[in-house]
Length: 249
Image (cartoon, rainbow, N blue to C red; front, side, top):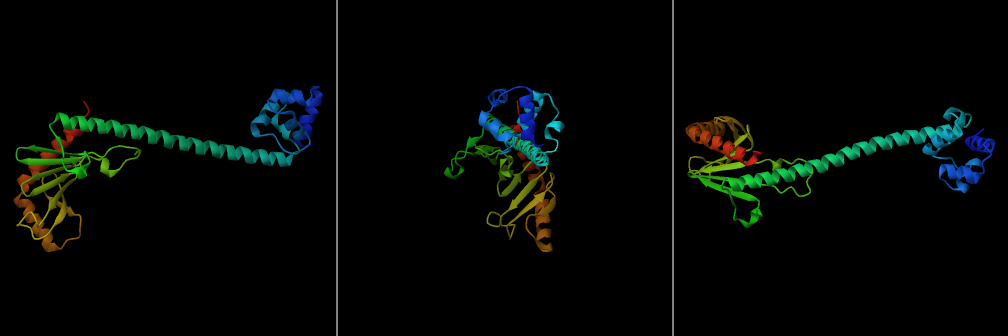
């Protein structure tokens, strides 16, 4: 006996018309009729409602209807997969919105701190009103605030970098423990090539962005050692300026 026959059997046992059963299940009479003649099957939610309405178990309702059991199992499996997918998608959307709001909040804090610490907007039109500069004790500091916009995920450009320039020396403070010395032969007669090298907080050579020869590495180390006190102070000042920008009062 298939599920359509079971529905009809139980409906007649209750002395209900198709119209009455349709009313109880909030469906049309033609839908009930199509179940009873086997044209289609009720969905999973309706099967549970039918089981409760007739006060019979799902096992009894579906017994002997192997096709319906397969269909129900398939629907149940798909429903579970859809539910998992929905939960994952919801988490992604909520995380995206939440992080986007955090980025906008951080941007507001950064800009307010820059202003309160005496930074001025870079007048270069290419900066788009997002670059700031500060002149202090013969040293120039420069940074760029990436507008949050619709970005909802972390980008390396959103980290606050502080470029510190003092005379011919330039250091890029990327964070609390990443410092990059920028060497340019066009600005420094003591260097015969351009390079970017990673140094520690004391100004000691750690690595180079590009592959360099042993001779160039030795020249860079000698150069860094000669200006070590300057670089050490510039790194310290850059870290201090960065901390003043990102601090939350």
